[in-house]
Amino acid sequence: MTISIISALEAKNRLASGALLIDIRQPEEYQREHIEGAMLQPLSELQCQGLDKTLKQGSCLIFHCKSGARTGSQSAFLKQLAQEHHCEAYFLQDGITGWKNAGLATRVNLSQPIDIMRQVQISAGSLILLGSVLGWSVSPYFYWLPAFVGAGLTFAGISSFCGMAKLLALMPWNRK
Image 1 (cartoon, rainbow, N blue to C red):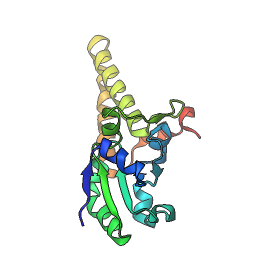
Image 2 (image 1 turned 45 degrees about the vertical axis):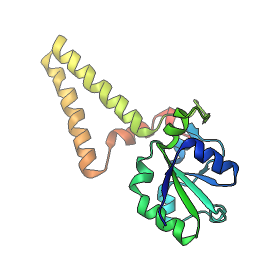
Image 3 (image 1 turned 90 degrees about the horizontal axis):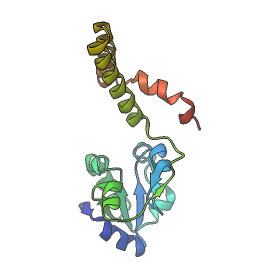
């Protein structure tokens, strides 16, 4: 048994025939935007607990993430999961992005914050840009700001600990 990639339009037809759509993203991502009818089962939960009992009832499962990268990188695991439950399984091509590119609707809740890693990217990029502009126009001492941010990002990549993400998580807009 292999897990095939399925287009958004094919997935929509399968969903109309009773297939189950499983969103493997994090709860924050799901709350911000999701495909109507998709059931949230984060990848970390799938890896620890397996399929939710509701999902075990499905004979056809369609897994998706934001772009297809997470589902693709976990294809062996998801294939094994589908085999254990004797069901057909598919990956949604290009994830929720592919769904939207096919002109299909999603449910968007703009009151939910964007995910933390995007906030880190926006913050780090802004600080680097600010430090560079100020270093060029005001004082070369401002070049220490992009150097500090770059060192922090390097440390985060090596250690899997991102101080900026921890700090941003404490901000009022990220509190539940």
